[in-house]
Amino acid sequence: MHGMISKPPGAAGNLAPSRAVLLLLVAMTGIAPISLYMLVPALPVLATTFGSDISVAQMTVSLYMVGIALSQIIMGPLSDRFGRRPVLLAGLTLMVAASVACIFAQTLPQLIAARFFQALGGAAGMVVSRAIIRDIYERERVASMISLVVAALMIGQMLSPLTGGLIETAFGWRAIFYVITIGAIIVAAGIAVALPETRRSRAAGSGFRDDVGVLIRNRAFVGFVMCQVLASQIIFTFAGGGPYIVVTQMGRTSAEYGAWFATTGFAYLVGNLLCVRFAPRHSLEKLIWLGLALQLCGSLANLFWSFIGWNEAPAWLFGTQMIVMAGNAIVMANSAAGAISIRPEAAGTASGAMGFLQQGIGALMSQFGAYLGGHSATTLPLTSAILAISLLCAGMMVFVVPRRKIVVSQALIEQAEEDEGGMM
Image 1 (cartoon, helix red, strand yellow):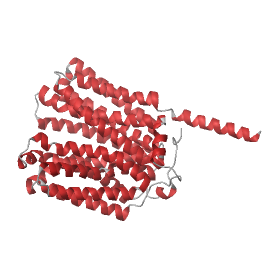
Image 2 (cartoon, rainbow, N blue to C red):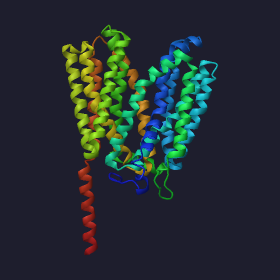
Image 3 (cartoon, rainbow, N blue to C red):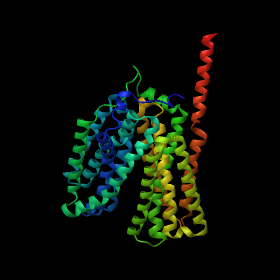
Image 4 (cartoon, helix red, strand yellow):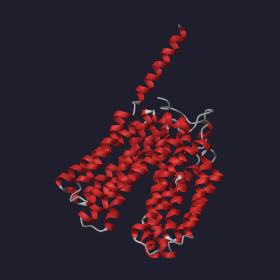
């Protein structure tokens, strides 16, 4: 069970108290998703400006998400081979160039293509930031630091659609890309000035194939990754089906749906803050089980409300989903910490694989959730799907991830046997 317990190098550990580094981690993680949500309010204007259907304008979002997914699987391994700083700076340079192309786009296909490359470069920060956190923090502190970064990021994400709408109303949609360009330049400058290289030294001859080989053969890595990915699918599935349930089934307005959906984001934020508070004092395995218990309890309650009809009111549906989302945040942060700690020198590759699966499967699950919400007369199909995902997520911890105490005990037994052999 190579890599179950490891410590970061002492040199990198000196970065841990730096507020500048934490601020950069938040900024580099958030530049791509914030840029995604800033443009959403301007989609109707884009459709009108370019004389296209809204579904075509939507591709500025959907292909952006494809770019994020591909960036995860590309930039992670590159950061393990060439270092965190070069990959981050190259990615942000690509983002700046693509953002400038967005400003001067004359057709919607040009804008869509530029948005794809904007995501491909900007999302480097999402995958590399997790690797940097593993580089500079002890295993048991990784989850709390990921949660801290995500908590700060979520505040920015919640404000970004409003910011984008205000900018578009006051200055036009192209002004949004001026702001994104300036933001990417500032983040790149901060990385160039304040972020030292944190990548661990690697054994001679080791490379991408060695990293992948070790990771995919490791039960703990597979279990933690699938636990994290499945937990994220709860968000995608509920987000896909929620609008149809609230607007179509319940007859509420889209604005009311937005207000109710914000409660789940608040619950996710609370879950991350709880993780920041308790992760340094408890093992990540214990916290994953706590999060799984909350997920399962909330999912079971929501399914029960569906059977008896209470979920036809948004207060019951979203009130219980808040419990699910608080647990979800705890599961995702700690399982991500577990996955990138298996082989710390390959944290970028591990982070990239996890992010790619999360985004790629998420696109399908969002469509699946929309189908369940849009082709049903009750909330039962959607709540059943969320419970099934919660059970699969728990199954990863039960059947795939080895018990850490057993792993440590076995290692001690083997060491004792070797010592006895040496004495005889």
